[in-house]
Image (cartoon, rainbow, N blue to C red; front, side, top):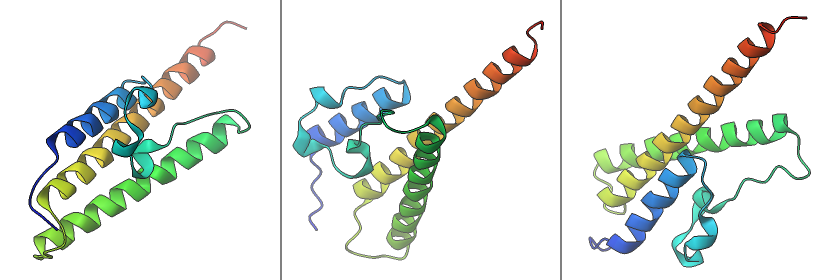
Length: 120
């Protein structure tokens, strides 16, 4: 693996992850060849319940965290096939996913508390 970094592709991936964390879907505005892995998946709720979609997203975030941890471990052990940029992007994806899940949890708790405080 070469040590060169495609800065344009890296920047576009980071912008996509930031937009997804903010709840904006910009997948159509980014070239398909720049999108890869789970970051290219667009969440659709058609045909699935909220519970199923939430469970799927939680498992995706879990897989992102496992893969980024594995890449970091391989990099730390000196694996020449793992590039530092690859590790950084994987860790950023994991962080954005975890932040998104935390925000969903916070909003669910807020909605639950609001419903519980409604007069009957």
